[in-house]
Image 1 (tube, helix red, strand yellow):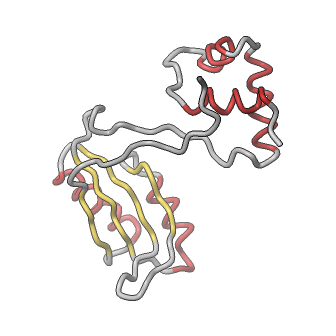
Image 2: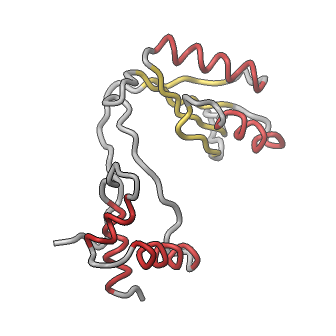
Image 3: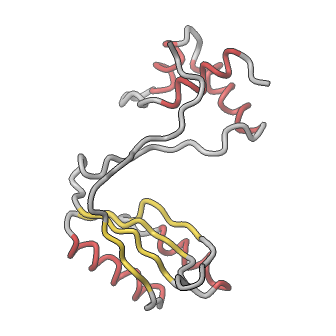
Amino acid sequence: MLTEIEKKVIAAIQGDIPLEANPYEILAEGLGMEEEAFLGILKSLDEKKLIRRYGATLRHQKSGFSANAMVAWKAPEEKIQEIGETMAGFEAVSHCYRRDPKPGWPYNLYTMVHARSQDSCRDIVGQMAQKTGLSDYSMLFSIRELKKTSMRYFETE
């Protein structure tokens, strides 16, 4: 069972993080608490496995990246960890994850590549293929963004 202050901390980190030198201090002040206590609650929630991950959403089109592609790769299962780490190391890659292949769709590794143009995406994917030795892949370019939100818990009034 979560305490009321834990719920408030969770609600506070769901929104935009202040673009300041000490964003957690600002979030903590908004709850009438010290930054150290705020961070302590976050750490406790993590240790209890109540927070699985904490991330940021990049609004890639607003930041100048007008092209992006989900690339589905067919990677040898025994090398997927190594290949995934190599691909995740590319600056243009925001997501890299493994999925089970399905009948008619043999791909098991996925990367999200962001660039300023589709040609740039293709160039980056070519570099990734060359560096990893993978040649079986499919590029799926985004046409338009339909949703860019996350689950929200314990909304504030």
